[in-house]
Amino acid sequence: MTSDVAVAERAARAAAAVLVDLRSGGLAGRALGDAGDAAAQRAIVTALSDDRPGDVVFSEEAADDRRRLTAERVWIVDPLDGTREYGDPDRHDWAVHVALWSAGELTAAAVALPGLGEVLRTDPAPDLPPRSGAVRIAVSRTRPPEIATVVADALEGELVPLGSAGYKTVAVVRGEVDAYVHGGGMYQWDSAAPVAVARAAGLTTCRLDGSPLVYNDPDPWLPDLVVCRPELAEPILAAVRAGR
Image 1 (cartoon, rainbow, N blue to C red):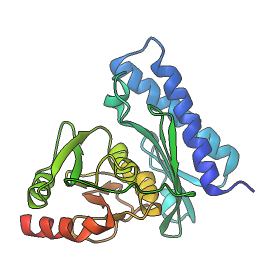
Image 2 (image 1 turned 45 degrees about the horizontal axis):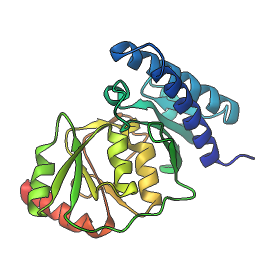
Image 3 (image 1 turned 90 degrees about the vertical axis):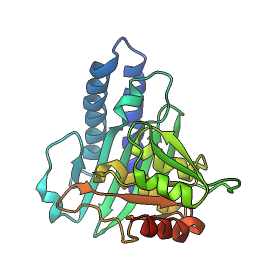
């Protein structure tokens, strides 16, 4: 039987392929984003229906199937994370998220980075590159949260504007930055798969108050999160506490 992580990768790659094809066509702007959302959703649902027909899918691009609240297995997906960046042909910081939640935990995931031609999986877990220099903290290009500035000042670090929420998370995994500190809220599908990959790589993932991130919650909203290298967890959370 195909493993769950292989199913996640297959679905993520299917969505990535249709997104790359669309991006090289004649569409642009909002029309490209809308077409990408729809096409990637179809690709993921088709792949999951083929491989795991009995599972529930919880997606940004579909009505909330409340069966997920009693299901044993729920796929949490974001077919196109970073529509704005996807619409800019010069940007690669967007992603496709496919994660499996089972019995209270994220158990398998794949994050496709179509602009780079990469897929990160929970198994085998990515190797975390070594860190050097000032602490780099990923933030939104358009809405950097004040708490990230507080943390950067406390750690004598620097803010690094990046695109989608998922890309900012896996940027920590890839060693582009050392942490992602977010206080403006997002939805569970914005981070489920990237957080699963980050955890597999040995990173710390939690809320700003240090409490666990909870997925497949009845309310899809996730108010805040921290993803960072483990040695930075306590300094970052201490800076958050002091800043509040």
